[in-house]
Image (cartoon, rainbow, N blue to C red; front, top):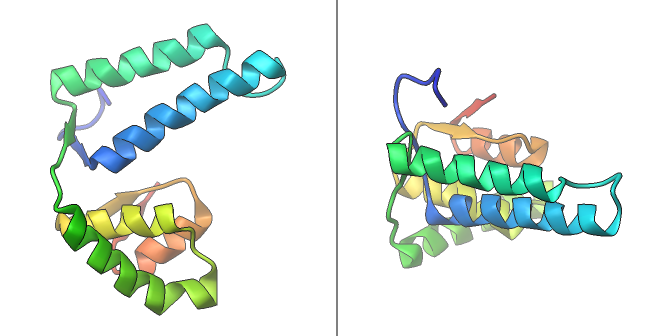
Length: 124
């Protein structure tokens, strides 16, 4: 985040899913030390996330979820049967479109394909 010239904008959905994912990885590690994140690592990641939010490096953009669902329904009808997209992936892309985003960050190949199909510039 320190190398970015501008803040990173995200939806509450992205923020919540990230936090949930970190917590789930801590749970996985507690059951099998070869998986997930150690508790200290996960808690540190959540603290760093909060630090970035507090510093304004990450900004949560409010969205009209009813509008996002309408956009998601269109995206789903157009792309899911042919490409097998999960609804959360569709929601993330719909939220980005609702907010007027031009770029979309993802490490998920299928989600990247969907965002590209919706004319978003995908990174990394």
